[in-house]
Image 1 (cartoon, rainbow, N blue to C red):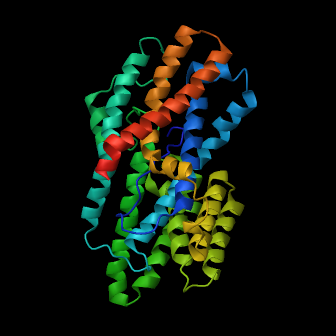
Image 2: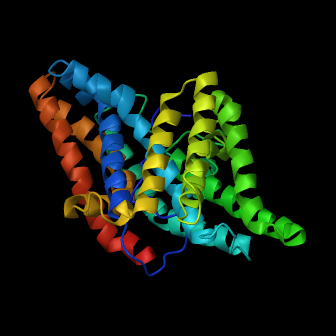
Image 3: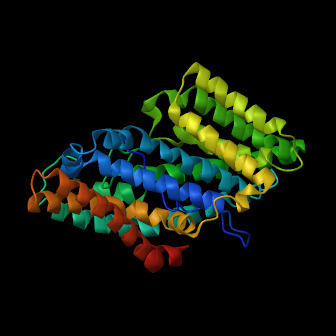
Length: 360
């Protein structure tokens, strides 16, 4: 899989059906900050602009390349947190028709994604007129298009048509895995009469298997189980933070993850734990609805999926145009990167208003 995490997501769409409720500005802020870090990571990773601008700020661009991509963990944890909130808010699953839920999730993810993919294919064709770097996708084949439309491009070893498409596929896999796990726990728990207890146990077991085994081997990084430890942290933090439960449950969650880090330290898992604990404590104390209630952050969080979908096409075009107009000019390259960042946000905001908000 690409070393580039995705957005990476957007607002990556919530992992559960929307309900009338109070806003959660802390989650909006986390999404806003994480999505912008991921965009910056991609800006520092591809093309002649980053290579030239690195002469002016090598340490900054190296940091963006090495560490900003870890922000993808924020979206994984938030996805699990919201899945638990929407699908099993008390710990008892409400999943009755899992395939219908999975289909709705697929449709919600894919409709904006396909529109952005069409724009990305067009921008890649334009970029190839002046730019011959290997990171610019080639003209797509029919098998590639079909694999992307079905969110199977990684599993079928098809070359990605954009930098973050793998994350959309993983997000869909994770949601489907969570839905099926909750449905199974409901069926099994109904027999045993222990639905509320069985649900977090099943999710927790999958998390442990992911953290101690699958997440330590990158051969699995096209599969949901590789990322499920982080996703499950969000879900388990939501359930553990219920006011009827002791803080012992959040402490137990932290202890399990720390044990996994002692076996094999991974910065991405440490970040996921920090986010999960912040959300858990935020839910328990009410800070979820109070902290970081800043309008610009809320707006950037809301449009983050659209920004994610469109920032790579913008980056391709800017990497083709700016070096053509001002070759080997570090200052022009740095300005080009900043313009690409600003244009990505603007295009994302436009697309959110025009398409994503209507799909949602």
